[in-house]
Length: 323
Image 1 (spheres, one colour):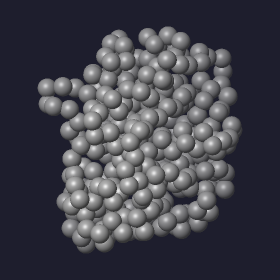
Image 2 (spheres, one colour):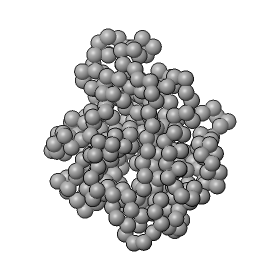
Image 3 (tube, rainbow, N blue to C red):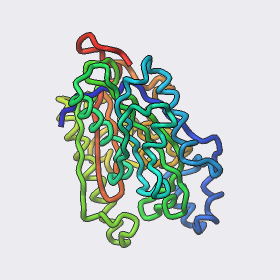
């Protein structure tokens, strides 16, 4: 699917406190052999957590930095809050509204997205583009905010999928396609409902999920690349969530060095935020080159597999307001 959107800016945030995974073994009920498997097979060493902070402490810093870059905040017409954990606030509170008001964006329409779990961030970019296209105002912007608290052992440890969840947040400013920035060229997604049980899958289902998931992820990457009118040889780097992709890389037949997983050992998997965290980490090291093509890749338990191709630093298609 080809979409009309540009990601005009990306910011991320990490809590300061870093924990070795061994420090979490006792509170999470992990045995020594399980810790070794997470470290040696899944590549995890550390992760970031703020046990004393709440949801707003996590998601607001990156979002505030991004809002400060917008000359007129009233141009932000929509706020989309992305979360993987379905329950993030008490039932009488709406997280998207809390975030919107804390940012001083009371004029914006706000709502949350979930259900695709850790792949929801890419769906949010796609949806934001559709909203802006329907809005028709070249000055209109959408703010996508991501971030989940690892607030219970049940949502922090997904042992059957090899994930130990850390905390991170991100914010993206989505603009119409004409605006310069990271122009979205295509988006591909697939949901395999047979794995909807998620963390409740049996051991055998988990094995099938791992095998089928690698294949599905490779297929959506190919679909997105082809949808952008490119080949895999045109892709400079793959920017995935923080999870090993060895089997998917083998199925794609690409160089493993193309896949940016440098921070997996330090940050672990961070719900729907780590794709964008990896974007900012890669940018900080000079790994994003103007005019080159990149692929976001994410999968969500349940199971959804998504890929999005963008051109970094694309020039304006025609004169338009710059975020």
